[in-house]
Length: 366
Image (tube, helix red, strand yellow):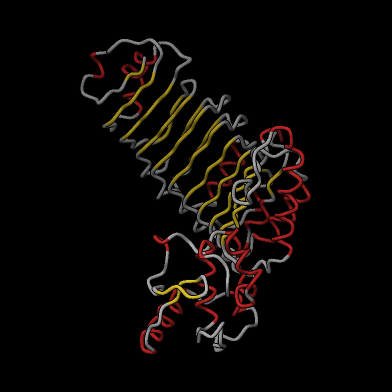
């Protein structure tokens, strides 16, 4: 295994058993007892998916003169960034095997080494699509923990390609899914909610979607492990969002930015773990109605909306740059709606201090 040491993660992420440099890689000359402890500790992390897919866990063949089992090579491989992991797979049979189950699939122009050039946007997009296709076609689809498709600055990404990538990589065991579609896509792509049903829904913790639509939320399974939901310029109605939230009982953070179809945001009482809500520039939004018992922080930006429900908010941050008399509203109405607020921050264009808010911490930006 003779490839540059840069193929490994930075030193801060280097596993503790690496001490000596040999043939461009760092290995340790630990005793048999130490190796046994290492193998035992790695084995405790999780069963390696490629092994579960037919490889023997007892296969401890010689790897370039080192008596190391496959699971240690797979663990090392999983620590590498995607580009370095791909390079390692090109020169090592052991890493080639684990490449088919590489867990962290993060695709963007930066990760894949495609330089920004305004005159080559179409060419860069073609290269990006080609590279993602090439990698995912050779991936088994097993063992994916994180999938990130960042195409914000790309152009004309075909919907069928996106569908193919998602169906290939969103498999049981996935924990993080990020989909950022092109800025000029007008959110026309409809995210296939059926992907997050049955076994796929049991492991997802973090879901981030940008510039797409969410329809047919009835196809969703119970997202029992979802803790973070981030929607940026996503086309989704209030009823569709309510259905999504009702299936996300472990949700803790909800962020919505530029979701223009939301008029009434209703948060059910089932979301007992939800503690943070952020809503920015959802221009059609008129009402926020929350019954989440532990919602303690709300960050809001946009036109003032009506707040309903049982609000136990402790921290409220509001940015209403395009609306006058925001302090008057805060002093006469808002404090009655959120009587338990302890920290109130208001950003406004031209307001003066109000004695009504004297007992609250207030930040005013003029």
